[in-house]
Length: 223
Image (tube, rainbow, N blue to C red; front, side, top):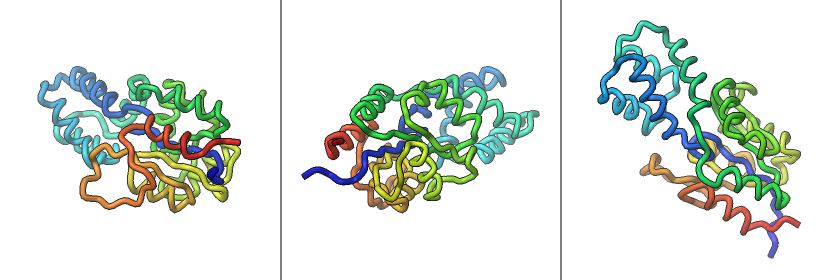
């Protein structure tokens, strides 16, 4: 029986399509070298970032106090946003997988929270902007996931409508999974072990985005 849901696939960006953790490690190493920190300080930076993934304003407030840095928080944060697009890379097979979905008749988009300069820079430098139909960035639109309006903007940029359904793929149970489902989308959760003990209602649970793409492709045959 052919699925009747429209062929729309929306994807989160950080830790879904791009390996933000690997990029963060490279940033932390550069940051430690620039500020003449010790090797153990890199581990502290990583531990601060992991788990809850604090808002960067909060993160750099703690970093500034911990290392008694003279630079204002906004300057530290701005430097991070300027550098990060140069450090991120897509997970293996992401660009090809998204291109294959589009070639098979799918509308493919990205919906991401984050500052405009940082997220747009990532989209451009990784090549993701060239292999999707559209994207919506919270820092540009003034709306953050899980607000359904950000999903709607992304869908419209892809030439689709949330009223006809589709799929949302992401690693965040609140912003991506609950948000996507509240917006009328089926949800595929990338379980990276950071939500232990949390209940979820995702339609599928996968280990990486390649598995998510395979589920979408096999569940619906465009026609």
